[in-house]
Image 1 (tube, rainbow, N blue to C red):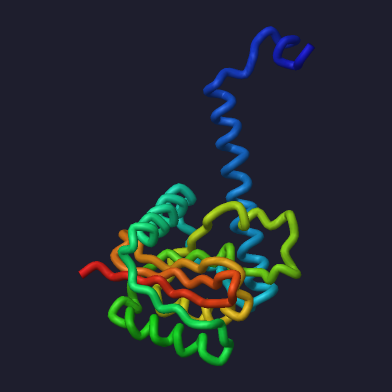
Image 2: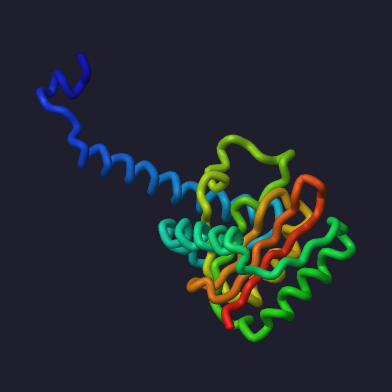
Length: 183
């Protein structure tokens, strides 16, 4: 006999949904703490004073970024991975968006933080698209610190998707920067 049956009632669907949401909210909080800790520890990037974007907004914007890319509404810069060349390509993209340097963007560092040799199963941020709201100029230095361990996509996007870019490396070690700007 289950606990609910002994009590004479069962968990309602509404109660179950609330409990599931509380568990998810707790995991998101833990993921933010872990991401902040790991970025500081492994890359000397301090997000402690930065504002994380609401998770649902973060998830929605990320989904829309990939919809935009699938719809082919982006420009593409593709080149072989070369640690000597990559900084100049990052400089290119930041120069391209220079007029937005004071604009607050959503920066998704979570899937870009720790090299595969350091990943462990307790890194909750690998399961959640967490974004930090920072001025565009502030994420340039963070990207430069993270790009040597590129294992997945890095996303930089304005809240309304008016401009942004996705930096990725494929299985053939080619780097692609997909970027856009609304006219």
